[in-house]
Length: 307
Image (cartoon, rainbow, N blue to C red; front, side, top):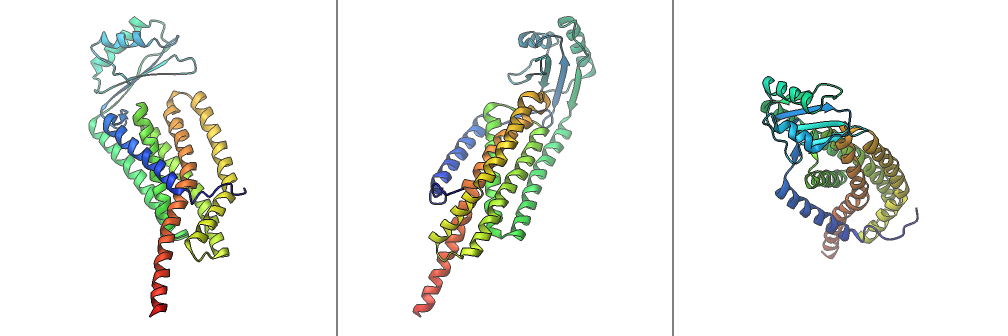
């Protein structure tokens, strides 16, 4: 693809945009926090299927009849016909409470197709799950840094991991702002986004490395031109790749069922963010870092020649 504008020279505007998103994300975290599922905090998840579209008010009334209150984000409706109710409660349910809910379901929805399904998580298991999820994401990030540092150079690795953190942060901010439930499928989506984003970034880095070897830029302006040329050479590939995967993710979001909706929503946000960061964040960061080293080497060489 022929260069239409100089991406690298405009990098400060892209950095400012990402900085604004980061600040907005921090504000969102401070105000709202996360809507954690029972995978990461103690509680219970109750699911039951009706023979009709789920009436929110009546489901809440059903739980109130047994002394339980559903929070603002505690009721999710799923199923192609929107006939599946998924309720999350902050407390672990006893056998007596489960029996009471089952009895209330028969009373409020006598034609329900199946009995309720209850999954409870105690505080220790929830804490262990959260810890393992964090370690999984960190381990993936470290492995990526090591691989890119060996395959390319350390500066490429740091630029790539900054872009990955940028993508993860945007997805986290979107979930916090929209109060979407953070569960284990969200962690799976985050790891998928990390893998996809770094793959796109590595393709661009590889083209940059090839062009740098061919053209051997001697100053920062020449380096910017080489990197800008590399970005536009891989632009068509990047756009086509993200578009095809995005189409599949959008279709899964609308037709894949409620159980994977958080996964596909995170994937959609992450794919868009990953394409943006691979082109407009990772490579300009590397240019800024490499350009600074070139200036230092040039200054040292000038001092040596004067002496």
